[in-house]
Amino acid sequence: MAHYLVTAGVKRELLAELERKLSAGEFLGLWPFGKALSFSLENARWKDGDTAVWEEEDYCSPPLAAERKAVLDRYFERIEVEPVAQGEGWERIKELVRLFEKE
Image (cartoon, rainbow, N blue to C red):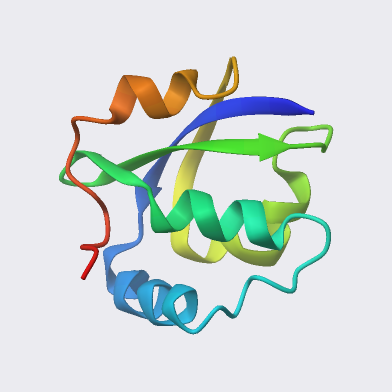
């Protein structure tokens, strides 16, 4: 298993839809990546006003191929990945503002 720091442009017009689907657990059943993807997106951070960043665990080659097809390409653009050790990505972005506010 590999881990990546993902940086992606946010399609702002679809952000509320993504938040609703995450809150409803709609991606959890996507095998084999639904739980990991949901966790990552729920904990994503704003890198700047138009860009999100998160750590993602992945098994695909190329990285995030299945996740992009199923979910990511709808809500994000300009997706880039950087290999990181498990937890390193989260550590690097922990001070950034969350993409979605936790209640």
